[in-house]
Amino acid sequence: MKFSAIILAGDREAENPVARTAGVECKVLAPVNGVPMISRVTAALDKAESVANIIICGPKRSTFEKSDVLVKLCAQENIDWIEPESSPSSSAWRAMKHLSENSDPNRPVLVTTGDHALITPEMIDYFCNTSAAKGCDVTAALARADKVNQAFPRTRRTVYKLKDGGFCSCNLFGFLTPKASHAAQFWQSVEAKRKKPIYVVNSFGWLAAFKYIFGILTLKEGLKRISSCLGCRADVVIMPWPEAAVDVDTPADLEMVSHIFNPSFKI
Image (cartoon, rainbow, N blue to C red):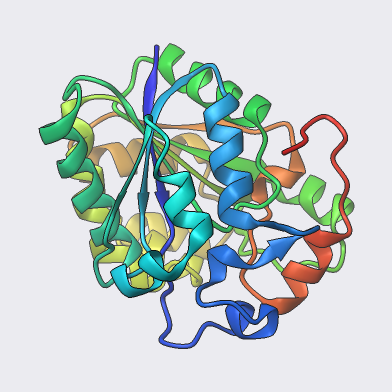
C-alpha cells in the first residue's frame, strides 16, 4: 500500500527559537550536520518504499520563494508545496484536501513534521506497513518513554503515563480511510493542549481523565474511548526506535540531534 506523505513545515511562532539559533528563515531549514532538517525528512520519505508522493505544507510563501533548498526540493516530480494555515492541524487538513483534489483520493495519507530530523526510511516503512495491516481508520506512532529516556537522558519529551507504562508521540500519523477525516477535524480541537497530556485525555471524557489521573487508564481503554469520540477506528503503532520520538523543539534538541550519527541512512 502506497501512501501520500504530508510534511508539516510551518513555524508556530513569528520568530522560532530554533530558526533564530541556526540563523535561518524558518525552523525546518536549520541544518543538522550541515543538512537542513527538511532535506533529511524529504529524503527519508523519498527513499521509503511505502511512499508514493510528498507534499510540503509550509513555510509561508515569502520564505519558500527565497529558499533555494525548498525550491529545489519541490522541483522534483513527486514533491509539491502548499502554503500553511495558522496551525499544524489546520495545515494538515488543508493538505489532505489538496491531495484528495489533485491525486488519488483513495490513497492513505501519512503526516509527519519537518523537524523530524532523525527519521529514516525504515521507520517510515515500518509505521506505514504496520498501520495498513491493522485494518483501522487512523493510527499514531508511539515510543515507550523508558526507552526514549534511556537513549536520550537529556531530552525532555511529553509523556503520556498509562497503566501499561509511559508513551511518547513520534509525530507520525496515518489517515487510512475516508473516515479518518473525523480525526483530522478533532485534532484541531485539542491541538493547543498537546503539551499537557491530562488536558488532551480530558477531551475524551471525564471517566478517561479520572482513570488517567489515578494511573489506571490502559492503552486499550484509551484507544476504545478515542475511537468512540472520533467515530472511527483508531490504533497505535509502537515504534522500536527511540529516535522516532525525537523532534527538534528547542535549540538544545538541535544540538543533541546534530551529535547523533545514524550510519544506516545517509543523505
